[in-house]
Amino acid sequence: MSKENLKILLINPPLSGLGAYGAYSLPIGLLYLSAVLKKRGFPVKVYDADFQHGPPKIKDESRLEFTLRASLYKENLKSSTIWKEIQKTVEKESPDIVGIGFETSMWESAIKTAKIVKEVNNKTPIIVGGTQPTLMPEETIKIPYFDVVVIGEGELTLLELIIALRKGKDLKNVKGILFKKNRNIAKTLPRPFIKNLDLLPFPAKDTLINEKDYPSYIMGSIISSRGCPYHCAFCCNAIKWKSTVRFRSPQNVVEEIEEVYHRYGTRVFSFKDATLTVDMNRVHEICDLIKKKNLHIVWNCMTRVNLVNEKLVKKMRSAGCYLICFGIESGSQEILNKMKKGITLDQIKKAVNLCKKEGIIVGTSIIIGYPGETRSTIEATLNFLRELDPDIIAPGFATPLPRTHLYETIQEDLLTYDLSSPTFGPTIKLEDMDEEELWEYHERIIKMNHSVKKRFTRLVKSIKLIPVFEEKESMKEKANRLIQLIKL
View 1: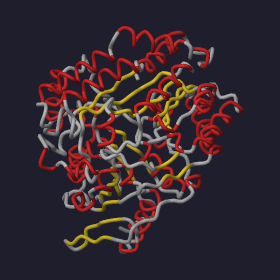
View 2: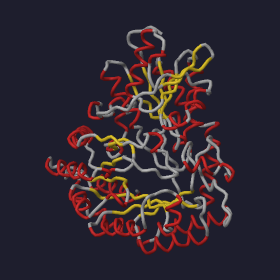
View 3: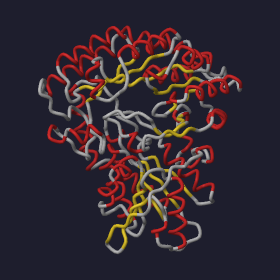
View 4: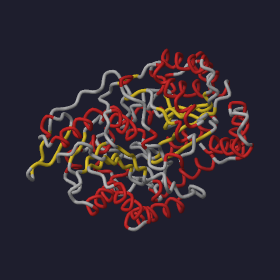
């Protein structure tokens, strides 16, 4: 392929729009890729096929609802208007190269998206990357529609790939890829991580097709670091990032916030870091800069209970933090130890109480059905949640992601595991309980989360955020923003 100005289309395959359980997420990874390509002068667009439809409304999160959603998802994988829209978009854009980024849960959707691209033009090279291709590159490259697999960080790799393809050069010198060559599969040397993340341009949100259709709060997604130093047995972050963490400087992070603040009118931001407060001093600096620049914003983040203290929580609240989500996972120390969480129940209590004291909404995630789980350990979790009384409880079933410690150790105990279908229920066989009981416990936790008291608490805390919104906003716009916060 020898062409001076290659047209590149990066695609985020549909997931929530097909009926899969889970919230929509802006494809920041693809926007970083498009930013690097745009900076080098390549015509590039990002087609977010998931955003155009959005997830179907969840009625009550009951087992019946999950079952219906699972059925809907599988039906939509076979036939949905989304696929026709993808076809029309590819035909309209007529790209020379297509890139597809996807997570494990998007496996089947990514394959179907690639199939459509090849049906439009079977000569279009398709490059895939993201969490799933990184975790299982050899399995991914076997898919007939995928031509190149990018392993790990994609910014520099994709740029070199595009340049090599433009010049018609052999891909063997491009680090960090698997590719098909003469009916064989070739693997190149690994790509080192980018040491200085500040050198990367900000995600190019202006390359999104239908950019103007995105609500301002969605544009407020920020990633200020990459990686996580912890080794939770069910999480793939340590594998994907090789247990390293790299940070953007506070100045760089706040510069991006400012840009989005002014360009899109965004006042609600969301840090998508796996663990924002790994470096507490850095977060202190970010908060100081937000306050110094008089950015009237609110924001949320995820972190660990052992990585907050009173001084930090106070600072975060003063800089607009309204919600912190903690992965507490269980109220049983025995199960926490099996998960290799590296936290204690006392640390959980302390962190939650610190946030409550400062008026920060507390979100918690719970994992049900982990190997070794018993009626006793789940009852302990329920009792612990009653004592803890967080504002948000998000339960989910233990899911073995590829290459994780959990995945490697429970193969014989799998009830079901299918990459073509995101998890809608229990996947691991337990000695003490069957699927029916696990669903019953799941619904009990859901009822706790939907209690009138918790909804009222979230409403009261959210109302305090009204002053951050600009006066020029109508009451309807303010109400819509608050609704988004309360729904989280």
